Image 1 (tube, one colour):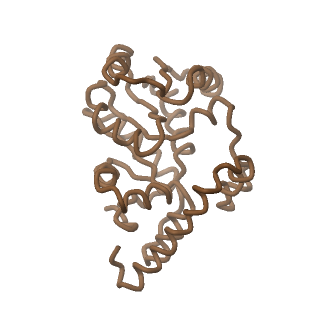
Image 2 (cartoon, helix red, strand yellow):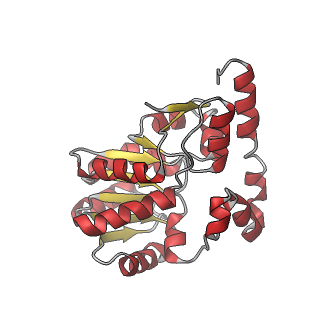
Length: 242
């Protein structure tokens, strides 16, 4: 049962519960996909019906951002906490390294996915990464065929929202993979080309501020994020209606 946050259903899970749920999907027949809605996703989904539908059709939707957690609390439906996409991915990587499931990395600039693969193999002995492809492709069919030929069980789709979510729905089933996870800029973090906030900032829910300090060009995007709290408060005053 998902918790409705301004029209987007979120699974109320702890990080460990989320990894367990994702691992179970990885073992099931058929294709499944995971989304990681942050405040930007929720705000965009309120204006884009297709994106909203794709988010709400996901097998797992994780609260990737403290703003989503605060909005849930305002709405009177508190979540157990945030589950960032990159932490969820790290948990899956550990499981895959022990179960032999194969991973394909899709996205980022040329060379980044390969570097991420190298570092992930070193960090997770036994991890099978069966292929990589950058996110700068014009035709989907050759990429889909490459993933299928590689025999990937899991795909980390890092194309940015909403492109990655739409791609998973439209092309995921044809890849032959069992699970796809939309992970935005995670490959840059895995590759070490982008620095993640220190753990103390993460625990304080201030990872967004750390990124803003490191990348001031993000200010325009970040300035819109408090709108989710305004929208949540307005919905609460309307009796919970989004």
